[in-house]
Image 1 (cartoon, rainbow, N blue to C red):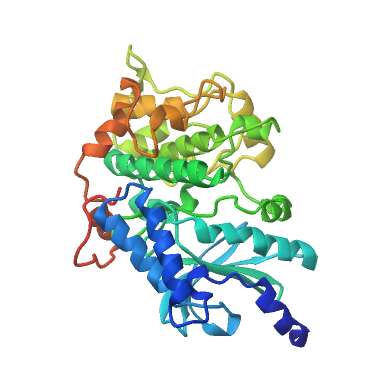
Image 2 (cartoon, rainbow, N blue to C red):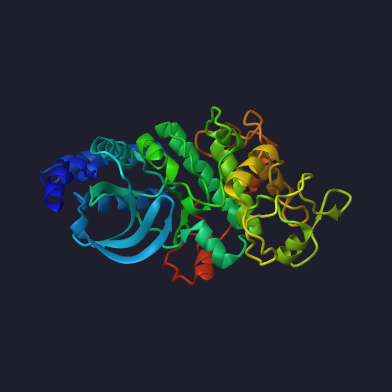
Length: 408
């Protein structure tokens, strides 16, 4: 079998377009000039522009990706989508994140997936994880990406227990800008916004990964889901037509999880909230104790990181039924600012026609607010937040010598 693999690789490998030209720099320079023009359209600040240009210059030197060129350093994470490892690309010396996806599929489908992943080369934004290329080897599709040394927000949450509101303000801006970029420049929906697909690094950057560019890959992995939580919107779970509004729901649900420290469906009761926040938490203008859904909860629920509930997690069908039929989660009163609560509530309206959308939140990819209802984003844009410093302290990372106070 290995002997048959070799001839297949060149046809299946996606290589960075700037490196395709055989000449000493002619086509590479032309491609870089074209990329620079595209970067000008994104209204980036100087630091963002320099970082993207530096990444693209490095990428141009990588050339064709092959399995033998990688040295495994460590495992970064594993999930339904596959295993992600930290690797060194030996020819260039670059550190990358390599996602390995094992799929039992026909060669024609595999070829189509690799072709569809080609569009990732065109996704160049400060809010999207950089892409080096993809290839097939030994029954696995490899997707090679920029390495983000802070990992994903679900990993950060394990260390932080809860993520502060001012930090989540910067996260919200980055996610919205990433979604707007995918929508406006590539007509792509993300389809899988969740804490594990929001990556961060010690320079203070916040980026989206694992968005749905390959319809064939999505279809091929459709039956591989195994888990106890879902970030899908009610309309997606019901099988009806959905749009980028579904990504907004997923972002809202993620923000609640990152705020309270655990997956928020079904909602925590007053006892657990007191354990989370260290004091009684009230809900409502009259100061009533924080209550749960009017319907009695099923016997299981996601296990809390605060150890207040040892019951087994909900069965996935119970959870999906809950998302569709019960009130959406919300942030408890008296703990977060009212504008953050309102922002989350607008993201988690069950009717997608009434839910906040990108047009409400952003204009031309920038958060120029059309309504005073979104003061959370407006405040977060001007707020001085040392995201890089907070992340490095939380994860005990070495902070770069020239960190950004807020990379969004």
